Image (tube, rainbow, N blue to C red; front, side, top):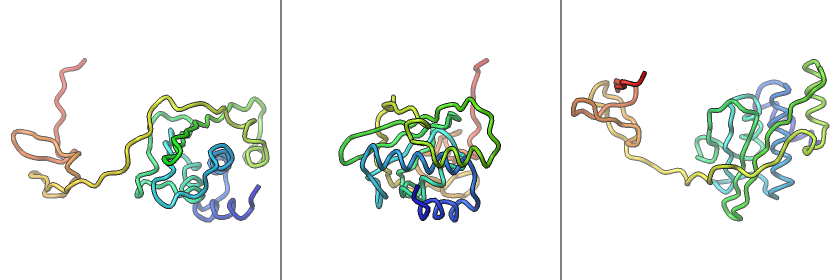
Length: 174
């Protein structure tokens, strides 16, 4: 285990915890299996299937972030991360394996940090394609609230351009 990288993740996240350890080990897996390190731009893309502590490790260790457009949230609630290397086309999905034994918080964190990655994760091929690179959109002023929103998030409502906050969804679904 790289103590320096772990401490960097802890400093960024604010405390040690098993969730952060999961993200730390996912980073270790990507480095070993895809042979890629910190992403200065969008060379490495992570699609996280959760919004838990481990995502902080991925941001600080691998350089994947929402702002750069190479960290994408897929809201399904799984301890799973898909990584795509744009330059080689390689990809991998790391899915945390369930642990059968009872452990307290500290024991779980130690187990996660010290176990081999193949004991922790099941490695698969992502079942979705590499997301396109981040795009810059024109800002449109909402004709209801006056706030600017990205043009791809604007809707038409009664002939006016409105943001998602002002848009009144219509549905007759039961």
